[in-house]
Amino acid sequence: MPVPSVDADARLAAIGRWDRWRARCTGPGAATVSGLMLVVAVQHFAASDAVKATLASAASCGFLASPLAVLLVARRGWRVASAIAALLALSGLGYLLAAAAPGIGLYVAGFLVALIASGMLVPFTIAMWRQNAADAVRGRHFSAVVQNEVVAGLIATLLIAWWIGDDAGRFRPVLALAGILAVAAGWCVRRVPSHPLPATGRNPFAALVWLWRDPGFGWVNCSYTVMGFANFMVLPLRVDWLASADHGLGYRADLIQLVVVAVPTLLRFACGRLWGMAFDRMDFISLRIAINVCFVAAMALFFTASLPLQLVASVFLGIGFAGGDIAWNLWVTRYAPPERTADYMAVHVFLTGLRGLVAPSVGFALIALIGRVSVGWIAVAGVVVASLMLLPERGRPRPG
Image (cartoon, rainbow, N blue to C red; front, side, top):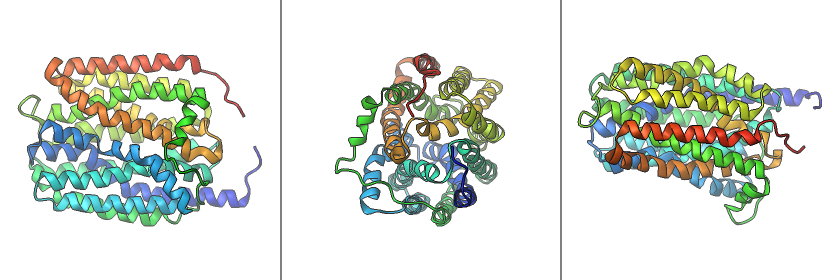
């Protein structure tokens, strides 16, 4: 690898500084989505299972639209950072709409706008990091940004739990602040150096050809699909299990914030830098399997009536999330040519959207048939199978 130039050092410093500020602004919004969104839907608006599944799948719609977003941005010749800033501003407007919603319809519409915009920006974020950070240090520096987002999310979670108490109807100022901060995040990220993506053809889904043109990339995506489907199937059920008084435990909104968000977020912060360094030094397949083990433990322990076991599950979930923050976002940089990073990431994110769109509805539907505990064990089996699928790729060299 050539010795980095002064310009390369300056670009790395700029993305580190401004993307950390972006993360500090988006952390509270992430905390709101993961802990408060469904609690308000259940306890304030008395949402149906269909509405809860729609909210749980909203970000997946953005993932599905990401290949189209990459195509449009490439054809327009926009800088990658400018595209991210525009999507963050749109996300902020969605939060503001949800904050002002008088009923469940506008509440859902606001979150759909916010989360679809957030889902579409993922390929651009990784392309921006590929443009500004060398392979040998990318995981370490990216994990520092994630830790800033995690700390901001943890602080926001504690404040939200204090503000909400046992009254989910006090959500409006929280969402309004999340919207303002999302717009501020866009202002920050515009200052990151970046350049336009290479021009592509007219078909936004043409990049899917890399799934069979690059067999290793395609097989890892197959494993991600099995693992991700299992995760998406049970993640929204966690909140519903704790929040619903009819067929769950009926915990207070502040306790749900602490179990579902605060504990995993604390572990994400504690372990994020370690996973970042591991990504730079380890074989990716071994790293991914280690992360999956944490998710297996979390799923196996959570769907009980025991608060201590739920807290232990949240610890494992937080450790897994810390690794997933790095691996899910950066793994395509181990497979994609530099100029195709956004295309590879768009494929990965698109497939994430497919499973994220379907899996929550499947999870809620299975509850009525077999119950939450059985759904949890099905998810455990899915993650185990996904890990076994990765074994043939372990240690296999990548071309170039």
